[in-house]
Structure formats: C-alpha cells, structure tokens
View: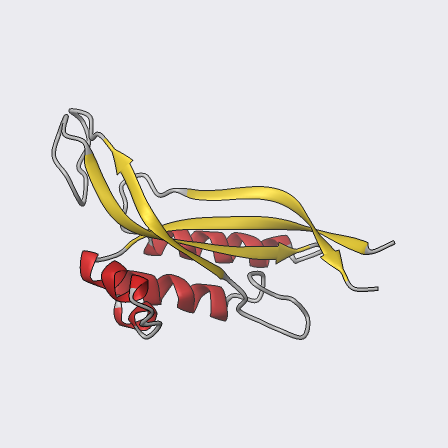
Length: 136
C-alpha cells in the first residue's frame, strides 16, 4: 500500500493584469515573474519555510490560470470593478502546502505575509487539510 502524509493546502487567488494572463495562456512562463503582485506572492511561497516544503524540493506551488467574478456591494472599495456591476478579474491561483509538523509560528508568519501582500479588499486565501500520496 502507498503511504500518505497529512498537509494543509493553501490556495491563494492572485489578481493579475489581463496582459499577464494572456502571456501565460500563450505559454510564456516568464510572465509569472513580470507581474508585480504575482511575483510577490511567489516570492513569499519560496521564502517562507512553512510553505511548499516537500523535503527534496522547496517553494513548491501549483499554478492555475483563470478568472474570478464578483459584484461589488455599496460599501466595497474594489481594486477592480464598480458597485453593482458584474466584474471579471484575471486571476492566477497558487496552491502550495504546509507540511505536517510545521512550526505554527512559522505558519502564522507565512500566512500573515500572504495577507499583507494581497491587494484585494477581501483576499481569497483558502486553507484545507489534505493527504498527499508518498512513494513506498
């Protein structure tokens, strides 16, 4: 039987410029580092020891391209869109993992860094428990 390890997955929904998303969809991976917000989030994943640690590999993240949609309410101060209008935001979702047994002070530091760097009024950063398969 294949073994497993328990981790917490962290999904960070990162707004990017429309030009960045177009470049990424065209296969230009360099656009990941040229978008200021995305480059900052990737740097946090790479620099924070609690994130993306797979033992032999560090700074591990899955990168998914897409869009988010939302309708700003009357009290909102959105970075994109206007009150009561449906808005579509070019978005990259970074998924990384927190290893089992990670020092919780390091985890808090990493999550605080992500929140501080995120430009949205209401950042979308999900945390869930997962199990990853291990090779025997």
